[in-house]
Length: 169
Image (cartoon, rainbow, N blue to C red):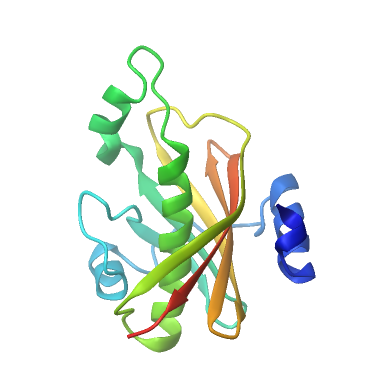
């Protein structure tokens, strides 16, 4: 799957598989949930970003967090007796973090269509409790933007995804 990526995105994805894309990540909130709602079209129960702790719009990097207590019902059904946060929602969370960068650069995003998942790898299960941290970097290429992101829990990389989409009115 990496063969279809640009060299820049493939290199970023490989780096993301090995170590956090950002060292020394701050924990103080720079965007709260209300500010995030102004940038994202998503709403509860599908708003999967609670706060942003780092935002670098020039480099296209965002660090966001989501409180897993909000996913209590999801854990109850996925899977009873061995709860795991779903991989599809991890990918969606990476995508929402990427849209935040677009919203900061361009104002509120009115529409966004994810066109494809270029690659995804799940290396550790995300259990209930605490929060996930998403580190995402957006690379723009003409009409498309690709977000390469990591989902971390307890300081460990649990998944990496590269997703592309088209934004517009």
